[in-house]
Amino acid sequence: MVLTSIADSLTRTVESAGNTISETFFEPTLRLGVTGLSRAGKTVFITSLVANLMDRGRMPGLVAQSEARILTAFLQPQPDDTLPRFDYETHLGALMGATPHWPDSTRAVSELRLSLKVRPSGLLSGLQGPRTLHLDIVDYPGEWLLDLGMMDKSYDAWSQAMLTRMAHRPDPDHFLPMATTDAATAKLDEPVAQRMAAAYTTALHAARAEGFSDCSPGRFLLPGDLAGSPVLTFAPLPPVDKPARGTLYREFERRFDAYKSRVIKPFFQDHFSRLDRQIVLVDALGAINAGPRAVEDLRQTLADILTAFRPGTSSFLSQIFLGKRIDKILFAATKADHLHHTQHGKLTAIMEALTRDARDRARFAGAETAAMSLAALRATTEEMISHQGTTLPCVRGTLMDSGKQAAFYPGDLPEDPNHLLSAARTGTDAWLDQDYSVMSFAPARLTLKPGEGPPHIRLDRAAQFLIGDRL
Image (cartoon, rainbow, N blue to C red; front, side, top):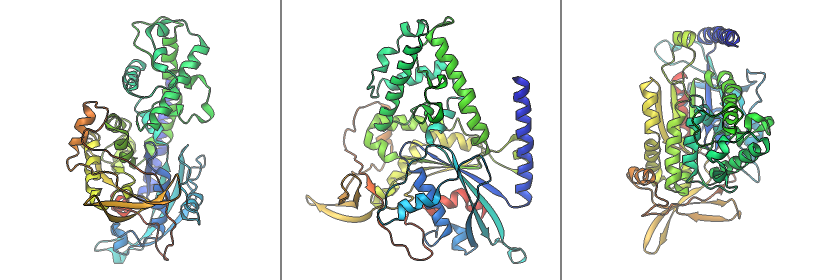
């Protein structure tokens, strides 16, 4: 096993070095990872990003476009023959059709290659012809990203963390009463193990529905062809000092380790470790609406996510000898169109505060990080409405549940994000001085002019941060 692992590592290093040399001296490739926590809008983000890079009329914040240096952008077959293609055309049709609707969410890894032909800049630009940058966009579920944070944890440490968090979460099938020391030290009984795993999975689904972020293991929520297998049949248990062989605790510990080695590690080696840039999409408004505990859970989750990354400065030599490093990470609060633009700065400040620990770690390792608020597809319009003697900044859109048009005021976010985070850290059950709410809007019916992509908020600035330096 050790020799096989060493040989596999050497093979990957040689392949990586060859790819790096090829990309550096010929047509460079930039691999952008796109992920997000629950309901953050990954599919919509990728679809709108590609559409707006192909028709760039709404991308003034992308410097290469404002300088008229992007000559064309076109889709090509993705380079990885074993990965499904991101179904761009179907998703775009869902958003742009006569009866627009949100596309299906991400359930597995997919990829799309967009090639951009760009005129170089600088003093010698007139002596050089156009060059091509291949942008490989890798879409993967956010649940799998959370799994990467488990790699450096023991079963005992993971169990204690999850049991502590579950004490403040919904538990529909009463998993916590099952997770006792007596159960952990009892002899393994497979039907009991299956019932506990099923109850824990139900609790994860309920927690996600209530706005909580860390719902690991992620494959419990998206099992695919692993459904019912032993590698997905375990759950957290209270600590046991020197558990005996044949006990439930020892078996769950073994399955936890198998999950890390057979599920998480291959994903890291095959996909995640090859990324150059990363954007993490976050439904911060959904967490705020869910309450202080959900906000604190989100903050801790975002900090834990950085343990999965390999942040740092990425250069030609470092890629050959050390492997790729993610040198730019963007944390983006989505659904900015659910707020009037006068509150976008407050949402960005909240996102910066939520990701402060994560961004500080990445910067220390040499990576460039940023936080912003955006809407990959704008589904609302803005208006000011008089209410009880005051004027409220509202947004108007089509409600998901009824299909009717409605104006909505979500509440006034605080100028100082610490007013939210301090309440979240103290574990209060509800906001003391304000109520925040979120509506679900359907995509608006659109009529685009030639050369225009779908309407958005700050998607061009996100693109400039993620790929602008390579254009």
